[in-house]
Structure formats: C-alpha cells, structure tokens
Length: 285
Image (cartoon, rainbow, N blue to C red; front, side, top):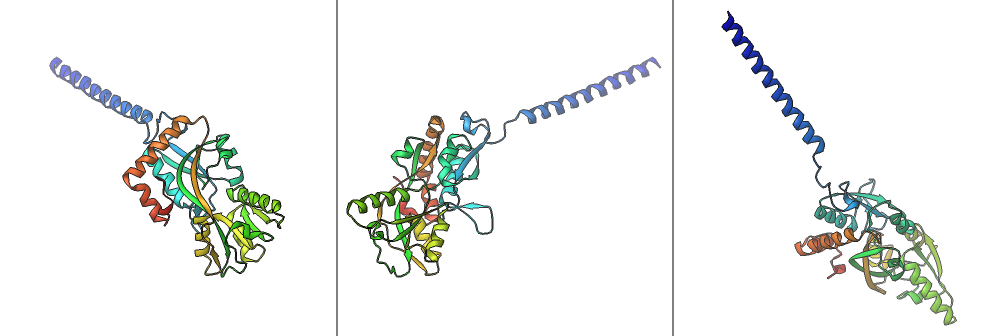
C-alpha cells in the first residue's frame, strides 16, 4: 500500500513538473514575441526607427508622381524610386500628399522624413534643406496643337499669358524672363499661378492661357494624354537635377540614402525604373 502511494506521489510530482515546463516555455515564447523587432525596425537612424520612411510629395505631377485614376494609390517615377530606396534601407514607405508651395516647410517641421516631389535643386532651396540628386529634367512649354502663337522659347511669351504651378522653378524662370523683357522695353508675360499643374493645363485647354510651363517629362505627358489637343514645343530650358530633400540635421539619413541610391544604380534597378516610365534620358551618372 505504501509502495503504491509512493508511485502515485512520484507520478503527481512528474506531472506537475511537466506542466511547469510547458508553462515556462509558453511564457518564454510570449516574451520573445513581445520583444522581437519587426522587420525593418530598430534602425540606428532616428527617422527610420519606426520602420517607415515617410515621404512628402505633391502627388499631382504625372508621370513623376500621381494618383492612379479613381484611386488613392500613388504611382510614378518618384513613387517607385522611393519604394526601391526604402527596400534597400530595410523599411516600408508612407506617402504624405502635401502642397508643393508648403512642402519644404512641412519637411522642416518633421511632418515626414524626406521629400520626393520633382523638386529641382536650386541655390535658394539648398539654403533651407539638403538634397540628394537623383534625376535630371528641363523645362518645356505646352501649347495648343499646331502652336498657333509660334512659341519656341520663353521670350516668345512676351505679351501672352502663361499658366504655371505655384512655387515651381518655372515661376522663377518666368519672373527672370519678365525682368529681361522689361529691360528691353517689351511687353511682359502675364503669369497665372495655380496650386497644381493639372489646373494650369486646364486654363490652356479652355483658352485662358496661351501656354503652360512645366518640367519636360510632365509637359510631354500632358501632350500625350490630350488626344491631340496640346503639344510640347521641345525642351526650351536646359536640364537641372531633381533632388530628394532632407532636413539639414538628417546627415546620417542623407548618407544612407546616397548609399541606397548608388546600390540601385549598380544593380540596374534604377535604370529599370526610369525605363518603366520612359524617362531613361533623365538618368544621373
């Protein structure tokens, strides 16, 4: 009888031990799951510590960045390049649609980590933020089909009306042209500015403007989508680089993006993305 009780006691002790081992194992697994770092997180870069590269962009400038028709899905050269850069950095992307005229200010108050918005690098902008050049584009002029006003260069807009997106380099170019025209005693260009490029193009369609100035890929795309109503006159102002914009203090992130961009160039992914959008001619070295 005593022997039987002894074996029962041993069995009970063993059963309790097994239960405790299983419980401990489950607890360890739960603890590991709670403390495990999700893919892409734990970056030494403060901006990427959450595992996300937040990208500010004015998503209304096809084919550089735009929303797929009827959706809120961003598409375009900048979108694909930003996604590829984020993959190199081991993070995901979040695109934050932001008006172009306030996009530098929004970057500097930490609304997002970088900006990619077909922004031409200029000395004035470089005083406010840093840039990583990634593409080259010039300025083109969009006119009605047949070019009835015989516009071939910006000075040919003397006495005419040009529509343009606010805060773009084209506004600066028109202001410089007006300074030259005024100095020469010629009629200045009437400049209409709009929040987005499609609004400027609409003014051309309805006859309120004689021309639209935009980056060459954008003007060519607008002409292509116009069903023959519009045409671009050809590159009129030499190409300059687009830049990925970063806060002045984001020096480590800038270096990481430079390395990631170089990796995309070396692997051929950069060329592949440009060719997808028929923009291989704007490739940087």
